[in-house]
Image (cartoon, rainbow, N blue to C red; front, side):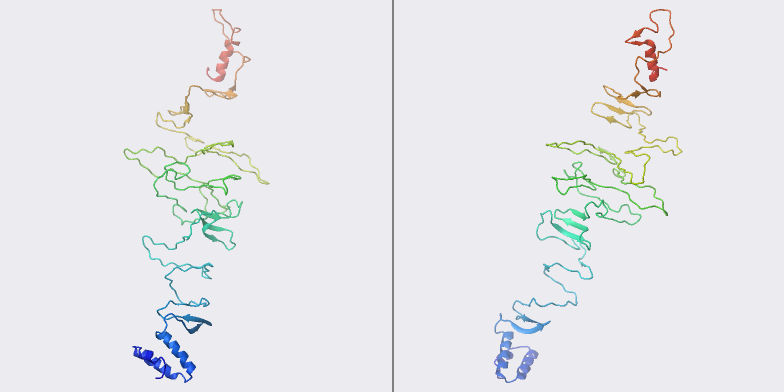
Length: 418
């Protein structure tokens, strides 16, 4: 055909392709430059230089360079494609400038359900060890409040400083009839040091307050706050009660043969293990009940108590503000004990005082349901005297400065004698 690439066209085995190239060659004018350019391009396409590129297209106004099919592709990064369908990336897609979800705000995952399926995986490529680092943050539109996972796998609810729990909180709503809004139920095995209270324990929930710096904390550091809150109740249902917290030691439990539970209880408080260095601890206690109520302007309280246990008449036989009771003889309903003494009850209506010494430190004292009186002196009036026939003593004789009448009267005053 007179073209320099004729032999190449003839070598094309696919007949429709060969015919197309022949028609294209005949359509080129006789200009030697045009034919030479077409010839070079054809040679590149059909086997002349496998590493050379051919500029054959302009996409979105940007010239793009394409290689032979058996060479590595090179696409200009100046291209800004408009995606009109779903695109699948088989390799990791890296976005150094972040990812904008546009107006949809959606992340969809099509992970197939399975034993180890993960809907979304957030895993830093580099290990985070700096306290200011975060694995992820979810903020509000102001970038102030939100939720984050920290470098040490702890979680933080962000709020303003001194917000009094009003801006740093989590609300977990559970449908009516369900047992709990949130449930901490670990299934791990007991291990030493698993919590801050008792070793070798399984802890359902652990609340620990940690200051921003261990060296210079200020104010109170509170491990947890439990509060039942509501607005003004003016109509509708009347709540049975408001409980800040309910603690229960286990559900229905049974000890099989050979099994012993050392402790069962609703709650237990423990004093911290205070280690004295150069500083001083003023007070250390296992529990503290205190009234912090302060009268606001225009508000007055008749009585303010740290703790009150009160009997409320309910129309039953026994009405007790507090009752310590054990119906089994030999068991104590209440025991106040140190290492060498105890106060308890071994039978109904009985209080046992077990001690080598017994001291009542009071200004008044009474027994046998006789009203308490102050300590008697020898100024007490003598009891009535009736003389006998021995003539050994009369009502004026004294023993240790006390007449017999004074001693008898004092014993009567205390209720020891009637």
